[in-house]
Amino acid sequence: MTHNPTLVARDLAVLWHPCTQMKDHETIPLMPIKKAQGVWLEDFDGNRYLDAISSWWVNLFGHANPYINAAIKDQLDQLEQVIFAGFSHEPAITLAEQLVTLAPAGLERCFFADNGSAAVEVALKMSFHYWLNCQQPQKTRFITLENSYHGETLGALAVGNVALYKQTYAPLLMDVITVPGPDCYHREAGESWADYSTRRFALMEQTLAEQAGNVCAVIIEPLVQCAGGMRMYDPVYLTLLRQACDKYQVHLIADEIAVGFGRSGTLFACEQAAIRPDFMCLSKGLTGGYLPLAAVLTTAAVYQAFYADYNAGRGFLHSHSYTGNALACRAGVATLALFERYGTLNNNKLLAHTLAKVTERFHDHPHIAEVRQTGMILALELVKNKHSRQPYPWQERRGIKIYQYALGKGVLLRPLGNVVYFMPPYVISASELQYMADVAWDAIQYAIKE
Image (cartoon, rainbow, N blue to C red):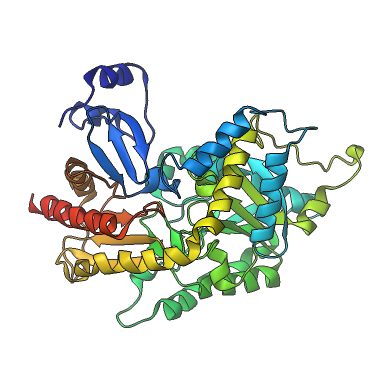
């Protein structure tokens, strides 16, 4: 496999890539991409790669989507950016109107930020500040689930629980309360997802009963803990959690950054439990994978706790230079329009069924402990011993072998450790899903040989 050597050399001379041990690129080729169309990426040598992970879970309707392209081009000739303090513009207003209409009833206010981590920071600060404004300054702590992930900035990192990302920076982080989670991979033989998630909720209930007086909010990833290995649980957990948060007067923050906008099978994952969080964090697919943008939706009650004369000192002064960027908001409006234009949620039901069908044989694979799926997210748990579920040692890096093999066959997979997952754009075809699954099978066979 050859790539444009000049671009690679220039890149490695000046760039530092995310979530990467840069020394790996002494042996693992860097991949300059020249262009993309639909579900396909193309490098400078003309090789094509099926984007099976939606370029880090952001791309919904394919690369170079003509409808989103046209909207951004039109906006570019009108307004690209303006300070969002004291000023506004139509794309931001329209996008906010649409989000509060589509979100669970009661989420009436939209605060824009730049990315998913920033959205989580906003929600954490809003929750804490709300209680402070309500004369409850003792509420300073947050409850999170084990194996959770909410971003890389210090507040977001603190409320996450994946050691790979968090452990190094532990001395810099606020102390949080971590509760054992509802991850159904650990259920007993014959136990349903609903029964296991219900049973595990007792641990959250106990924690809230003991700690609620000092707690601002519980933060969760609804239904799927994505960066934690695509671990999944039943909606009943969300139902019980909403009831408990109401009972103990604690906010519920739903981090829908990865699972929102149709990934879970519904527009928002919270819909499957018929709940409304106090804060909903959105990003990734919000602009169809085009531009950085995030939003935090919250309630009128939260908004009113900050609404006062300036001298009262109750304002929320959090800000980003690119808050409500006009180009990003216009991309967001175009993306939401495509859900109706394409009949996306109904089409995704068929795609999810096809995804399940093309991966059926993985259930019987001797080194796959579990095939699990929530909507347009499907994950394969690669293990050394299927009976005992003994994992392969992380030092063996079998996931990177799968990545390299699949790339050589024209499919971009990026396993999370020993978890191979599929999260493709919604415009993928049945034949492309089949090809993706076939390459993944061969890649796994290659990785377990050594």
